[in-house]
Length: 158
Image 1 (cartoon, rainbow, N blue to C red):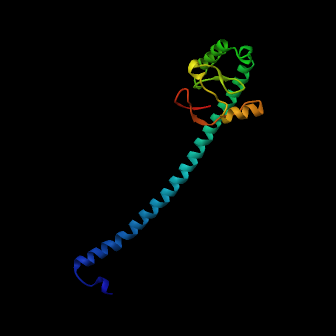
Image 2 (image 1 turned 90 degrees about the horizontal axis):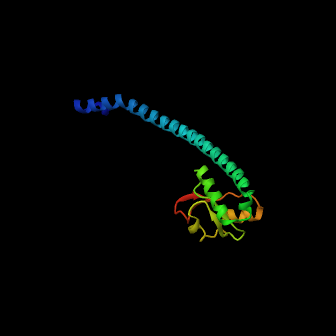
């Protein structure tokens, strides 16, 4: 076998390579197995977090639906009395800081009253929004989409 013929240096290099190759192969295989395990654990953790976030969103949506039904039953709101509605919506926002704004619109989608930035909000029309169209058709609660809110220039759910 010519592999072991030659200088002592060549023989030592070959001997070290033969001795260390199995260790490198085991380290590489262990790294790949650990990587796969870490990916599986990350997938499980992500699924668990997403499940939790989805549950939180379902609860917020249910609470919002109940809150809006209650607010809609207030005579000043159902009669679209501007100043009284603005005060009610403003009070609602103070008690529920998770909401960016609460806006009362008429059947055409024009803003009647807003809990925040009332005068600026009155310039807007929500008649073209998905949730407004669905609410008109279903005559009930409709969830919105993630949008950049024009009145506040901040990310919000409508």
